[in-house]
Amino acid sequence: MPKITIYTSPICPYCVRAKSLLKKKGAPYEEVDVFMDADRRAEMEEKSGGRHTVPQIFIGEKHVGGFDDLNALDRAGELDPLLASAERAADPNVESTSLRTTDRTVNKVLPQSK
Image 1 (cartoon, rainbow, N blue to C red):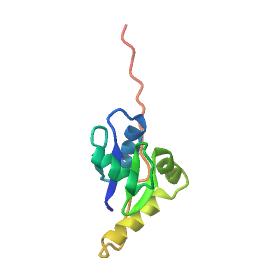
Image 2: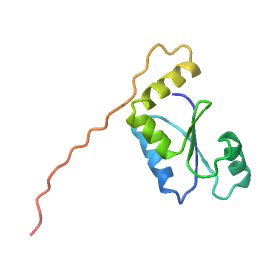
Image 3: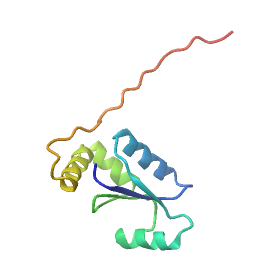
């Protein structure tokens, strides 16, 4: 997998959603908490072209943006190829890759207790 960095804060619901989507894809990431760290926040803003909201997501050297941007890539079918191409760029020995693109959910009806 390519190096994925996500700048977050603990009180951010969009950060939770972004991390959940990356986990669903089987994509490990490095989380950088910028909530009380002015230096890391400044780093995030510099790398993201001045954006100051969280999350800010980077796949390899590519700045993806926030959760809405990450989700839009996924809905357009562009996230998996981005993860795969970044993985190939990070490791030239990778011939092919398979990413988990679906998540099966099984709903079980439980009997109600009386």
